[in-house]
Image (tube, rainbow, N blue to C red; front, side, top):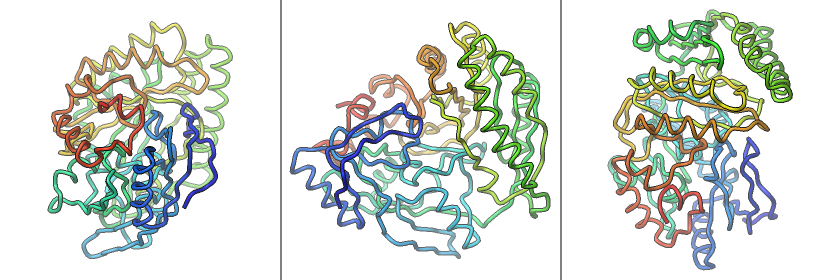
Amino acid sequence: MAGTTTAWSNWAGNQRSVATAILRPTTVEDTAEAVLDAAGAGERIRVVGSGHSFTPIALSDGRRMELSALDTGVRVDRDARLVTVPAGMTLRALNALLAGHGLAMPNLGDIDAQTIAGAISTGTHGTGAAYGCLSTFVEALTLVTGTGEVLHCSAGEHPDIFAAARVGLGALGVLVEVTLRCVDAFTLRAHERPAPLDEVLGDLSGLIGRHDHVEFYWFPYTNRVQLKTNDRVPADDRPLPRWRGWLDDDFLANTVFAGACRLGRAVPTLVPTISAVSARALTERTYTGRSDTVFCTPRRVRFVEMEYGIPRAALPQALAELRRLVDRLPFKVLFPVEVRFTAADDIWLSHGYGRDSAYLAVHQYVGMPYEPYFRAFEEVAAGLGGRPHWGKMHYRDAASLATVYPKFADFQDLRARLDPGRVLTNPHLDHILGP
């Protein structure tokens, strides 16, 4: 089960660690044994997925556990639309599995490289005012606690643990198996077009009401956005030509954009011009496709990111303040700001707990300064009751976070019960949840 000790870094390259041992369990029993062994040796374990979190949440100063070899089997109940899979499976593999059975996830984010465990543990979400984060699609889960106990949790079995562990940050146990509530496979009609920011904000409630999924990207130093809407349609009758997909998603959105970012990093005075040209270069397009192929797009340009969920009504104020602070920064911002929407849910540490949310994600190209930008944006978002995405960079601590999560103390109590020896922790978790 143990592997060669190696260094680890996340996708963005901003988090790195070296573990004392690498654990690759193949069964639930292996996982429980590894937790008990670490506890007996006085060591700690952190589970890593695909490395798509920007925070130190997966860093291990003890043993690192990888779940890619964990095989709990796959069970598909087509009639009930329930699928049970190993928690270490990637979303990309899950989407392919579901498609083969005529099923699909009800909603997805724009990246499919994450493991299922990593995605739900950090509250990964897509956009859609009627949809919560991906964790809201979890029907049941199996958890190996910090004491080595194996718990099967659902709304009817250990409901308090189920309410917490669906966004558990890896602090309550090792997720080994997940049952997901799916829907029949469906086709999306995507419509993408440039638009003035003021026009989009003026019709925001109408856009959200008319479309299943709405998001937009604001280009700094401009009044322009790229607006994207996705809607369910009965037929895949307008597939995107292969050449157009390559041109827009590979060449323009990755190759050309990467070149523009390198130029902007080298000559910062050109950034406002680059942003304006980028806003105009993306033209309108409409196409249909299998849901997951529309939701998910390639991301090869490296960046760091902070994302905040705020009450939906606060979005215009947040954007107005964000625009002002970007203009005042002593350096330039190369990446657009992404805006998405989710529905309220009842998961204890979900960013959407108890309220409909708007999400603002701020990015900066690798190698560019970002901390003053992120801290200034965090001050704006926190002042509006914002909750930071657990997988994106932020500077909050347990005392600060307790003020925006009504069930925060309940989560802390549950953590103390399920992992009393703090086997499944690291300095970052102790900072955001309390030691």
